Length: 175
Image (cartoon, rainbow, N blue to C red; front, top):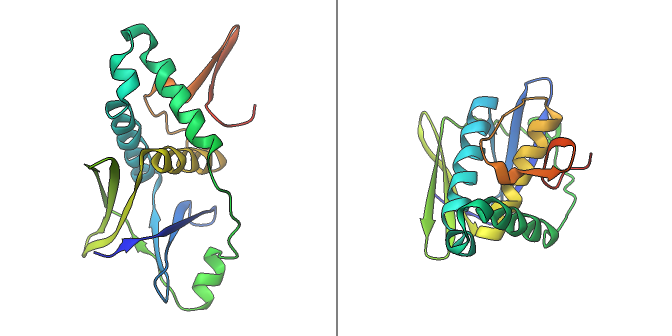
């Protein structure tokens, strides 16, 4: 299973799936995830990011979510935004077919993470990155899920901002 250097996300409303373009292979590898798989991945990432946050582990129990929230927001502030000309339609026109992700494993390796994507046929790709990059990937997943109106309901209190008199809003998303 080859390690991927870049991941580009796109939601396709016709298929109601989240597509990932994995590079830098030629031709690029395209995989897609259902709502259920996106929920599982987002939940697994949220849990893993909580567990590896050393400042949160040392904080009093009632402040841990706030510490993880600040770490998450800091990672999002560092995000490098890039626009990709890739679209699901462009991939289809070039004959690239998307493999359906049926399993995702999240591993903690050294100071970082590795995501392993699998289909029914076997391993598709491996994505290695830092905790900050995983925070960014998690936020992208949640943003596309919001766009798709998937209502994932990831059980991580630090992913919602608390404001006096208002319900939670996904962290990093505009109101």
